[in-house]
Length: 389
Ligand SMILES: Cc1ncc(COP(=O)(O)O)c(C=O)c1O
Image (tube, rainbow, N blue to C red):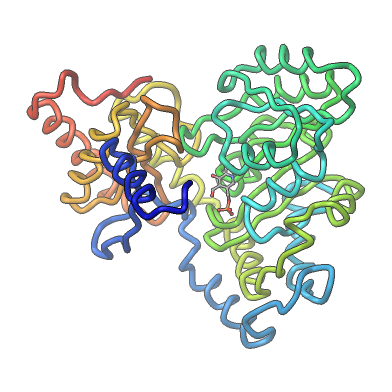
């Protein structure tokens, strides 16, 4: 971008014209939020809040340093042990954010000589981590394990560092990656399988351990597991879990782990409490997934509902924005998701459910979406709101 106010303004106006300009605003408090990632409703849970408050009194607010200096507290240590046990891995390493965890793990395992095979709909942090590593990246068709296998087979035999990278549950589509097939393909190609389970961790699987649990996969099948705490656990931060040597290697090499201030211990203590509540209150998981299935089923959306994320594809940016505004006028917050977050022509409403939603609120949302569909048709659009891709 040129250093020129007119050029900046022109770029912003261009985004505006194409309905792609992003604006931030404080969500109205009286609307029901159907677009947060607080799937289990733990962000304001009394035990989580209390753990945070107690830890602030004990540790103060900031961690004061990076992990390798003096920022690594007993709270961090406890959480890492709990996450390792919960995920069935030898060790876990707590990162400040999921974005950094992905940048860190990919950057540590891949360099310019490496090859990365990546799902086309992977999260931006996996894409950015792959780009930053300088590795050769090839992208396979979404959730197409045959295509991934082909791309792995096409890697130059001289290339030793190989990664197969995927979301576990895709953040904008809510569907599961075909992990058993990907695990097999990665094993055959001697590639690390890196699974970002941000949207599955805490919610998916019989006991909320994520997509590996859902598919019955071990740490041998999925050697590099990433999860975040800002979603189902309602707090902030992330982790990478795996074998002890892998985690020790990340401590040496993962720059977004090394060169940043450690998370505040109080945030970490709150996450520890959230992990306990999530394990105890299995009803939260059952409830949020039942809500999602209900929205999905009553609206007759394609595919099956396996996560708290229910996308309603509208294709066109302007229509997605209009539908989001219409829903807000009816008291529901559902954000419109547009490119570049999703591919061009797949703009959508991304409905997310939470265990804190009442059934009556979910039903009211379904009614509101149905009304918004009618409005869309009445306004003379060429077709009703699309519900399939
Ligand atoms: C799949 C996925 N991975 C990683 C992240 C990043 O996590 P964090 O918000 O902790 O940076 C997100 C969303 O924020 C995500 O959806």
